[in-house]
Image (cartoon, rainbow, N blue to C red; front, top):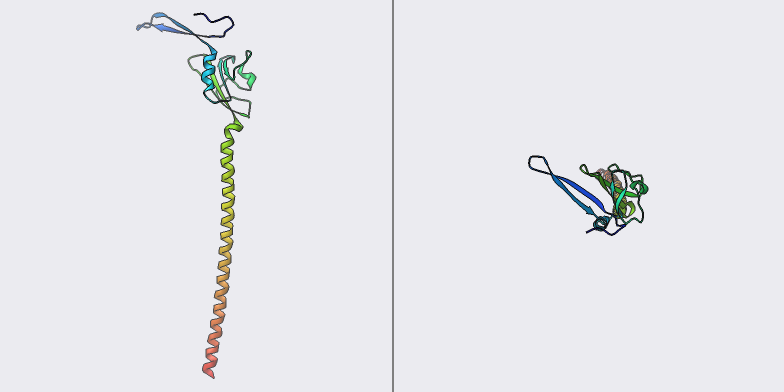
Length: 170
């Protein structure tokens, strides 16, 4: 069945060969971008683009109202390319077909749980460092206190020996 007028479709063709490699025919199909848009919507990404080699967007989530190129969104068509630091984007190109897919996530939304965990870890590290510093100071105080007690004991022993000598001399 034909698509209604004005509805976009992506034509796909594939050569079919006989077992001996000779031409057997062509299989043709039309895919509607809305099918990709529904699939992309399941990813939970902030933006997904199916694009041609020349950068023309064929399907997108959120859906586009007008024709656009991936460059319009700060993306490059090379793998892994983005000019937007607020996005974490993965781009994959098909080796066999002139299309690619870009999947973008808002960096602050994606990294928020990690940053929360890092903040907790920083607090734990600060608390642990403070505890170690306190225990170190307590240990130093204890060693000094015991050193003073040992000195006092030594003085007491010397005094006791002196008292015992003077007693025996008496």
